[in-house]
Length: 501
Image (cartoon, rainbow, N blue to C red; front, side, top):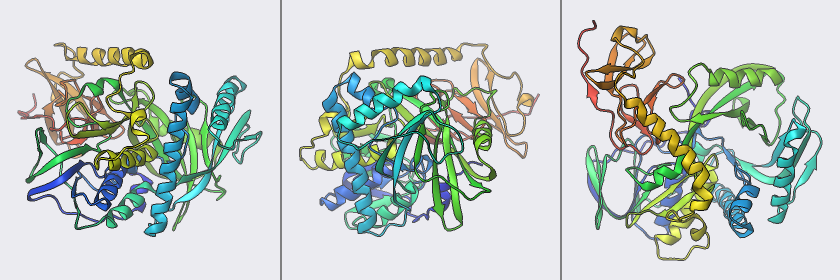
């Protein structure tokens, strides 16, 4: 089992599932940091809101994040400056700084116990070959008024070539923050429902959201689901990836203070510590790949642990987890009204989702209450940037086309059910149809169509997390076919297994 340290250390408020019918001004699909912060701001503005969370509040992508908050972005501000212009990069820096400050203010206003702590952000390189990245990042950050300190050594047990430090960034437990903020939303104006997946949105004026045991009628809808639910042209500009994380205890008890990023383009490792009631942990993150396209020969958690043990005297790896992020085609998130009237999206956060989620909520508060927002144009979800998006757009969509070709008859991983071992999942072809077949640890088989219910791509088995993952647009399903995350509304279609041959 994989469990994030954030989820393990945060309490759940236990909201009921939706039963019956409800009418509100705005329905929010998703109870992570984007959805809950949006609900808080909108309810405070006098709007009637309902939050529909398919699992537990704060327990999805938010609980799988790094827990870091910063002005910087994972592809560096100098890339945004080069691709767009200095003013765009300045807007990104300004909006993200404001979001971190707002999170801090909320933790103070409501005494939210989420271990919020100001920490320095540090970018380092072990190789002189990557020194240019340090230099470009330093120049861009100084352009935007941030104080940057150059360093020649770090409190890390290995030698570096160079590094830069920016003070006054932050870290926290994101699941605990979301849980705490949810408790402080005005109850008269906001209803929160857990275990309430939205199976279908009947678009119109108003929109009707259908759930297993009820429906919600709303004039406006926010899809705070990381990737928009349903089929949108926007999905062709979103590239889903997964990244892995460990939380370990060290024998020495000496933990580095700060948010440490490496320039290593292969593994993208980062480090940070986290102080809890039962002691400190060292958290490391890295080794990302396209969703549903992991190398079956690689042990991502194992490699991450091996790399950590190479540089630290690890006592025990206590938690391990992975999380999903969506890289945008032109380098900026898509926040605002979608191609459907009065349906709003917030997506393409890359690995910077905690801060961008709060930026999205601040934008939505203005857009949905008829006010102007100074950041909205920069992040406009309907923007058209073909020259800035062309290269990654072509590359990633050729990759998607390759995955669709797996539906060619004869391409399967196994020929018989008996080839599927305990704990495994394999694609088997049955009467010219691909089946996703799983055998649990007790030896029981289950099967579903291997065709993703989003846009008909063939799913792949994720052996690290025991899920079926769509390599085209990032939908993920339980071994038995239920939706975990991604743009798919519906579970994989069940298939009946006859006695094994």
